[in-house]
Length: 278
Image (tube, rainbow, N blue to C red; front, side, top):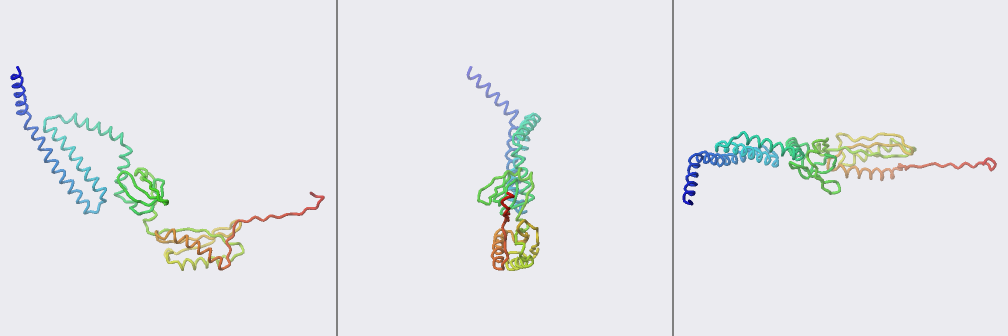
């Protein structure tokens, strides 16, 4: 009985191999040759993008995406070659892809925006930006999120979808920035003299750009002072030190020139009334 069962199994295997062997061998060859060809094409695509100075993160992502799509097509072709109906398989893949897409829609949104940020480059590493409600210096950009270093050296990891959905303000792109300071002088002080002092300070500071030229003018009349508005351009790197140094120089020079910088004051009058009228 055992010998008969073994003979039947061998016969069945022989018949199966005779009937399906060529298609299985063909499917295996399709996978092996296709995988080799897909790898070669993917590597060629990445080298071409590197020569075109495409961002390494984006070129690596596109290379892997191309390779994955080609492998998926090869699997379908191999199954067809082996005699497996492709219609149910494609339907199952489509349903699975839809389910995965719905489950990962947030991640896919970050991924899509990551590709767009790398392609269009609204900012680069080292730029100081406002994006996604956060102000910071860009430390890194990848396909899912952007790392920002805040002014107090904390690190913020902002999802790319949040950055792409809001306005992006790049403070470093143009290389220069304008600062604005307000200074008050007393009502009895000479406004023209104060403006001349500030203009001399502009001219003596090499960090303040001549073009566009710095400006100073009367901005308003306060309760206890005349407001002067100062505006000047500097390079991005000199933005903070130039304005803080200028503010200190204005105070010191005003003191030297006898120009007062008043603070809020209140005048109290005491009226002595006759005793009988109290």
